Length: 192
Image (cartoon, rainbow, N blue to C red; front, side):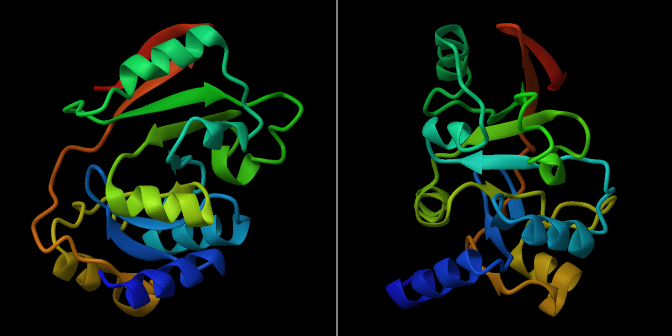
């Protein structure tokens, strides 16, 4: 991707747009996690169950603090282990929202009063997050359909209902992330 294309995508995301990009697992529909209207648009485009929360992609631990979650030393050590570089299976971690701000983040947690995060290490996603902030990125498929493994398949699903497409120039068919829940300093596996 050249500089002009990258700047174009940044501008779209900063202004509430959405697009399909290769994530660290599979193709996803990305948009700003900080803009409720963007999150609602992703739910609509994917025909996603309105009660199903989204995973938030982050580039650093400091992004978690943007959602009013303060990590303890023990939680940080657990995350360091779960999010080690070069880990084969990517892991998303569910954490409880602060009671004082759960209402503020309702559009993300959908009543679960928890938020799920995944630290990404791909060059493109890390750069995008550093520019526009944390992103939501559910898989690039309508709910119930197979996740798109190619940009062509993603285009067949969504056509012009998203604002941009970024191709990995290869098939992207990895497993979705493992999901764990962090409760009182313990890890509970939700999806292996």
